[in-house]
Image (cartoon, rainbow, N blue to C red; front, side, top):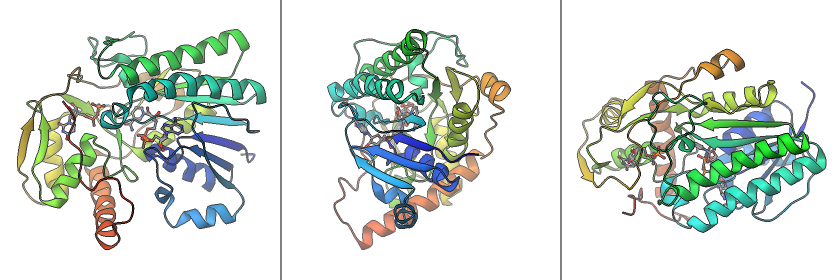
Length: 334
Ligand code: NAD
Ligand code: UDP
């Protein structure tokens, strides 16, 4: 494949850093734009120095709520905090990031004639009344709740994408990403996978919100990155669901975590956050049939790899605490 110049917004974050690494290793010139709210350049680990010295990786500290002009062939637009704890920290900023950020990236794509992919979310389905979720479902979203800055923000972002496509003939791709986990998740992320694993490794009780019967379907990050790549390089506009369609309850996730860490775990129940979706599972027919997408990493293997990653990160933190925001897995503010 011809080397391309590729912009990844949110490229220092969890999914973004994994995506930047894959694109860099394919030989492309990768430009990572990030304001480092939840991202961290340390996500590139030992590869960072090599990437910068190669001249094929650039980091620009920039907030996508402001415009930017860069000559690129493709844009993967991921910038936006994804954990409920983080996106609810400053909800006005979250909706500005989704709306203004996407508007600015579309303006850039139009100006330099780049193809642009939006990292949208299963949250556009809200607390779904159709199960599993198909792309044709319009969702059940509370427009004024505490998740709305993210859910409605992404819905407007999708609208902007399709309006630019229809009005300006822009080449767009829209991915609806379901719960993803794996290396480079932040310790202070607040999402269930990082909370459970870090709590287990610290010998703390696992915080189960509600009865733990709510379901999610967890996708390992390398599979998700492969889906984004296939979508960008295929001929489908989307929206297309990307994730893993094995659905489990949070109590089942605890059992899987127990196997991965090799011990039985205490749990403590906390109140269920407002508007927490009861169940979620992607219908992946479109991704499988139109993109040839097939998630490969089992939940068991993925959790084992994620446990190893967090073990390493927690050890590094013990040895060198550094400017870390928080060493505790945050529990959702009620
Ligand atoms: P993350 O929080 O680890 O990464 C988001 C990145 O965006 C961070 O590096 C952050 O610093 C950066 N960012 C946030 N606001 C910004 C701004 N205004 N300007 C520039 N950079 C900004 O989250 P993630 O899990 O890697 O998610 C990446 C994308 O995928 C997000 O758009 C998210 O909505 C989407 N997504 C993720 C999941 C998931 O399960 N991880 C699920 C659905 C959708
Ligand atoms: N959750 C939990 N304990 C935690 C964090 C989350 O039980 O410490 C629950 C949360 O209520 C939700 C599910 O796990 O039902 C997934 O939460 P997460 O924040 O990871 O993702 P999202 O709700 O955005 O799918």
